[in-house]
Image 1: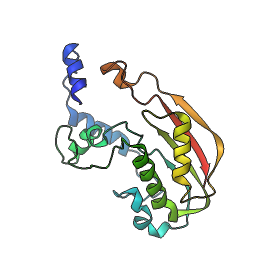
Image 2: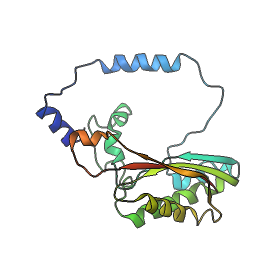
Image 3: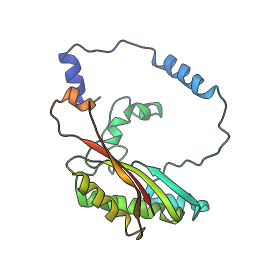
Image 4: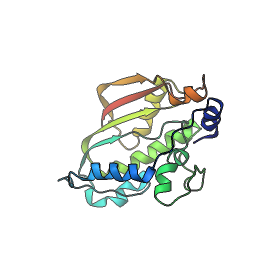
Length: 198
């Protein structure tokens, strides 16, 4: 966990009880896998979204809908947050920074919107005409109108006719975990859901 979390736990004597992690994992895995394999098949790849059309070229022009939640602007370090999953895959048993990815947090708005434009270009060839995009997005230090404007501008180069098919929905984030450890911290205050015709 980040140092501010550990410091808070130490100051408030909040250490968790010791548990047999692998026994818990075995029981969860058994529960999840006991129902058999799903009937539908999917394709999964560990690849940069900007290369999605290359990875999944056999689906070019066939995808009708994209449901996604891109990284939020200036919010989190995904490598640090995923340390437990990474540990199970053989990585370090504690959070790391920059040893796996240097491209997972954007602190400059122009770079962030450029990344999203490149992401949309990466999936563009896969989509059917008039495909639907359902997208949840947020960010620190941006207003709702700024996020909406930036999202639409990032989509326009790949999808010039992009338009909403439902009114966007904004959800205020209450009881953020960070507030427990760093009261008054300026994090993501809301998330916005969009449903767009591409």
